[in-house]
Length: 263
Image (cartoon, rainbow, N blue to C red; front, side):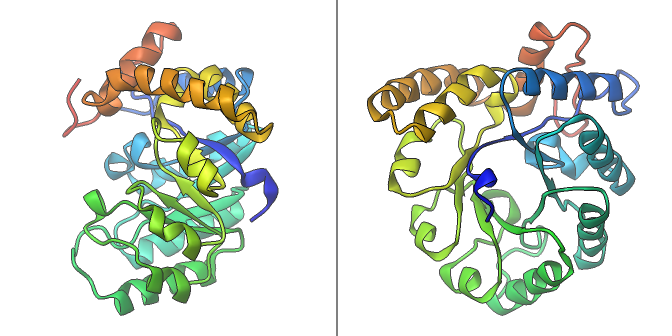
């Protein structure tokens, strides 16, 4: 994985107007806000973006807008249901300027065999012309990634929202999916972290990233405590709470979510 992929990745939210349509103006303004506060890497169409509620053409539009209005590195999450749709979304990543593409294992049939998951990931990885990132989130996907899967599937990195640190030694680059548990995984060898609450306070997480890059261990350990305290307010509110917090910072940002989420 390119060294530029080390560090903080922000999984960007999707703003919805009252009509239910994507609010493009708010999305662009949020990207500008993140850039202004030092964010250099984002993920579009991920869990935080409510990918499960977006139509395929909406995910494509989100990627196009992000590439047009964000100059940093973009990870595109292939959020379709089924191999055929996700192959199409991998092609979008190739064609629309994503710097990497990430994919969950199949997300409806839980308890799949390792062989089936390996075959699925290999097909997606073979179609990718950009670095291919595996995404581990068994709480929602119903299928956990294992050392055998990681060994069998060529990939550039792992985003691990399960925080299974035993997987760290089985992937080229390990990114912990956590807004609160950052310092310890980096000390253990993680390449970076994916923090949803950085949508709201990007300057805090960008500062943490720089402390880690500069190996200022003591200061980073102290900032970890501040980050944990700050993130605690979102522990039960999830995406709706994040949107409400951004709406208080960016005038006109809509706090709407799509059903089945509730404000």
